[in-house]
Structures are given as structure tokens and as C-alpha cells.
Amino acid sequence: MHRTNIPSSHPRAKSLYIRELLVNGFKNGMVVQEGLIAHGRGETFDYLLGEGTTETAYTAIKAACSLLLLADHPVISVNGNVAALCSKDVVELSHLIDADIEVNLFYWTEEREIAIEKELKKMGAKKVLGTRSGGSARIPGLQSERRIVDQDGIYKADTVLVPLEDGDRTEALVKMNKKVIAIDLNPLSRTSKAATVTVIDNVIRALPTMAIEAKQLKQKKGQILKKIVNEFDNTKNLSESLEIIRCGMNARQR
Ligand code: ATP
Ligand code: MG
Image 1 (cartoon, protein in one colour):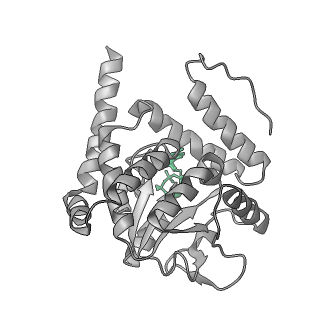
Image 2 (cartoon, protein in one colour):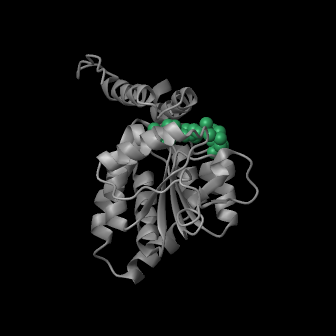
């Protein structure tokens, strides 16, 4: 696949590399044009947050991993951007937490679903759920294509990890009494506010960090994981991320 020659000394090298992954995902048929624009909204918040995983995000990552390890039926929902940016990390995390992987797309086409499934399988996924092979169910109260979910996957799941989600679907999943873990750079989005645990971080950093953390927390007793979950306050955590943005802006102004 096409690679530009981004010098590692370029001040925005990492950010340009992420863009390149998305553009390659677009050329492979996994990412849609709208996904490239949605990434732009994320980039803005990443810039404001300092382009690194904050302590606040790390606290949310611990709570997210604890929830996933406590779940009876966890599912990781994958869209085009997630597939282009971190298929390998999705697969690694799914093995660690024993989760199903399900493709779920706002701009659904069979070709896209197949392209994403192929990428996930290339990275080691044994089974990828989706809506193509029929047997699909509907999330009540949603109009978009994302309402269509796998009967045996998201529909039945007790805990869903939704990196890069829509606010309305997060709200609908919570209404179905599911625990929802979101990864979203925007602490002000409806997704961030509606989720049970929101990790305010770039998905490209958050997922590998979650894998490292899940490996460690897997050794702990259920009681310890429950304590981590109970002590986590999503609203407070989101306020802390906003505070990081606010303080960062003040410091840069000087
Ligand atoms: P909501 O529907 O939750 O209110 P939104 O409408 O503002 O969100 P969408 O366009 O639906 O946003 O989805 C894009 C979301 O994904 C944005 O909140 C953006 O910050 C986030 N995002 C984009 N790229 C990344 C990334 N690489 N890592 C984490 N979050 C990202
Ligand atoms: Mg939205």
C-alpha cells in the first residue's frame, strides 16, 4: 500500500502517520470519506489534550478493563476507522478479555463489511460477527444502519466496547441495560457523556494500553476489579479531561 515519506523528525510525524493509515484504509474500502472528516474532529481534541495518554485516561482505562474482565459476554464493536487504525490491537484485546468482535457500520455496505472482516482475520481474529449473514437483530429506538446488530453479538452482550461511537447508539445501548465503554477524544460528545466508562484518548494509543492493563488486571481477584469499577465516576473523569484542556490552553497562551 502507498506510503509517503514522512521524516520521523517532522513535528507532526505521528499525526501524519495516523492520517496515512486512514487514507490507506480508505483505499482498501474499509474507511468512508465521512470517516476521514470524523477523524479531524478527534485530532482537534488530541491536539488540545497534548497528544498523549493522560493520567485521567489511564484511570478510565483501568475501569474499562475491569468491566470487560467482569463481563459474561463482552463484545468489541468495530467500524471502518477502528479497523484501519488498530485491527491488530482489537484482536489482541479480544483474546485477553475473551470478547467477540462485531463489525458495525453507519455507512453500511456488504463490501465494507467484508473488507473489515478480512483485515481483522488477517490480524488473527478467528471469528468476526456482523450483519451480513442474516440472523440480525435491531437496537430499539435507533434509525441508522448502526441499529442492525448481530443477534449473538452486540444484541446479547452485557458489556460493549465501542471505540469511535455515535452518541445515539451509545444512549440506546445503555437503555438496553448494557455497560458501554467508549473511546472518544471529545469529552463533550454525547457518546462520552452517555457511556458507562469513557476513555478520553486516541484509539490508537488507548487500545494497546488497554491490552497491557488487561493482562495485569486478569491476575486480580473479582473483588478488586469490582472495587475499581465502583470507585470510577465517569462524569468526574470527563470534567478532569476538560480541565486538562483548559489548563493546557492557559499555559500555551502565555
Ligand atoms: P456524538 O454523536 O457522540 O455527539 P459527534 O457527532 O461529535 O459525537 P461523530 O462524528 O459521530 O462525533 O464521531 C466522531 C467521534 O469520534 C468524535 O467525537 C471524535 O472526537 C472521535 N474520534 C475521531 N477519531 C478518533 C480517534 N482516533 N480516537 C478517538 N476518538 C476519535
Ligand atoms: Mg455523532
